Amino acid sequence: MRLTSNYRYIDPVNQEKTTYKNQIISLEPLLNPTSPEAQKTANSLLSAFRTSGFFYLKDYSSLIPPSTVETVFHHSAQFFARPQSQKDQLAMPSGAANRGYNHIGREKVSQALTTEDVAKEREEGGEDMKETFEIGREGEEGNPNHWPDMMDEEGKVFKETMQEFFLRCKEMHMVLMHGIAMGMELDVNFFDGYVDKGDNNLRLLHYPATAPGTFSDGRARAGAHSDYGSLTFLFQDQNGGLQVEKADGSGWMHVEPKEGLIVVNAGDRKFKFRFLDEDPIIFLAFFHSSSSDVFQGSISFSALAMKKAARLTRIC
Image (cartoon, rainbow, N blue to C red; front, top):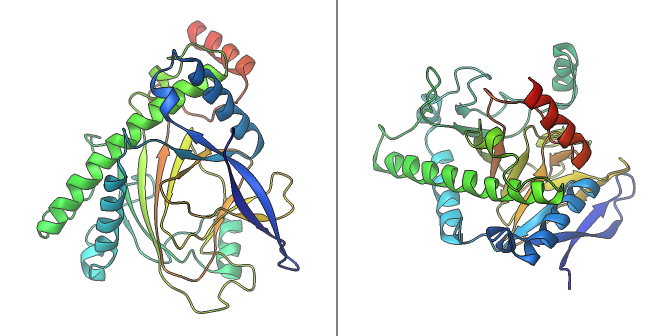
């Protein structure tokens, strides 16, 4: 029996709620890719990405234990509770660095293609109401992570916790990429050379509480956008706030937080995400990107397209 989970769709005009369903997929069969259940799970992955663009993931505790996720949320909250002066010492030097702290109002997530259009969106809808802390791969020459480990003991624990979590997410990403390859009828290790190094990014996000009615005019804490790279892992606290646009563009679905489940979405797809709600939120996002020295781009969930890409890679 295939498990499903309920989503609430809110019509942007009359706010009436309708129920939608989406898959919950188990990671466990993919840990043994030669098993019959692994192929069924791989097919489910592709089906979810081709339809809704995302799914809930369960049974991943052998790679990321629930206690680890709980610890990461705890230390994320501790970090954002630091005095502003301490957080500002770890400020991201530039957008290209993708490492360090961003204060509230620095970012504006947008689908706009020009700086002029982004500026117009800022003027009309304001900046995103969030602060973030970005963590990248260690050992990147000239582009170090910015850790609070020199501030106090909590800063040292924070660094160790996030480094471990980063590597665990990377390992789980490889397992899912094996599943995607199987679903495309490719060799199970087809993507390994593209993502084994990985320019991945762990983003800790804090959405402070806002006044009632803040979003009644259509604004959002983080505007409509699609993610980059191959896959994104989204870890929500129980306050939620995540929405995904319907495939036909006619409205938005609330992606309810489910205990013990992760939202996994395909990066750089037509499906858009945004954040609403007025309660304070701590949110974790792990963005999986291919190795920049090998390949950059999104995945076409078509076996034919990937086989053509493989032939081009061999030719080049």
